[in-house]
Image 1: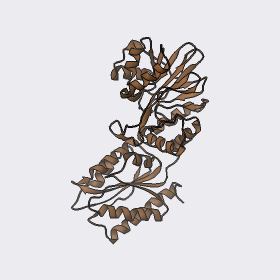
Image 2: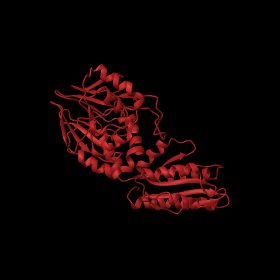
Image 3: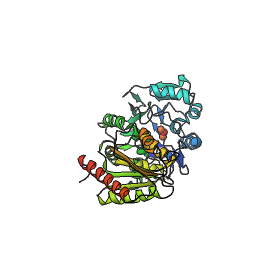
Image 4: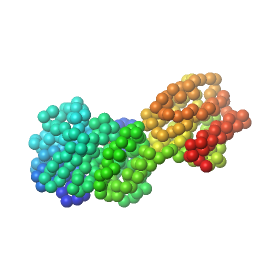
Length: 395
Ligand code: FEO
């Protein structure tokens, strides 16, 4: 993709990664991603805002060459993670006068992770500005979105916010701006769930910090650009502030059909009571879909058979992730089956210290479910409905 103009002397110079399917060797990327970098040319100085993932360095360099950038004064580094900073060493070599502009914490990380020499880095304070002549960059420290060193950059004259990962989406597209809102909403929610949700409380503070900025464009470092900032700001407000909804997320595994039978009965019982259910078979689910479902859910019920006295390893993985992602869940429970004993409930419960959930009486049975077991599942469904009603989540 060639450089693309956002405003006079402001260009997108990043790279679209259509084929990438995994991030951090962990996060599925069903729709690829992009590494957005931006060139801001003032009447006196020129700044590059972020770089790209190292395997795509040539795309960024070609874009800078196409714009005939002979001199670069600053490379604003909003975030030290290598998908945005990894090409810094090449850029600093190409432009020997360029100085990295970043937060003090990011300076240390850049020196440690990328071995950037200290004399090539200039730190900026929160709300400090940098004049490029007729354009002014304002730096807003925004720690923990999603590393401790992160900042946002605001281009005052053009009212563009460059928030790096915050508000981003893993979505490869030929469109510079959002065209298909539903697709971008899904990708941005997936991104929020996987990357930002653990820092929900801190994001609230960062949203407060930018609420008085006049923003015409939000230009994140992944995915399409928002020329209607309210779209993503309102979505974030819902994901971050709104109470959870009348939803049960049910990740499960079944080896020989007992837990599956319980899940099927239980899902029907919940639906009968007017509760929305999102069911995931952990043997084949996209973990990103599960993370997205956890954004809004009030309750998680984990379904597992017993393997070597504990939960199935896929269940362990999902519970570990749910605990790490810190969604707004209020209640949790466990259903499943065992053959001759085990400590599944104890082990799963111990894995959820980050979640401020109340554990509702689990239904863990011996063998294949019978009449009494179905009645116990009905009682759990009743209990969930009662609790949701007490919190005004269900009517
Ligand atoms: Fe897109 Fe935290 O890197």
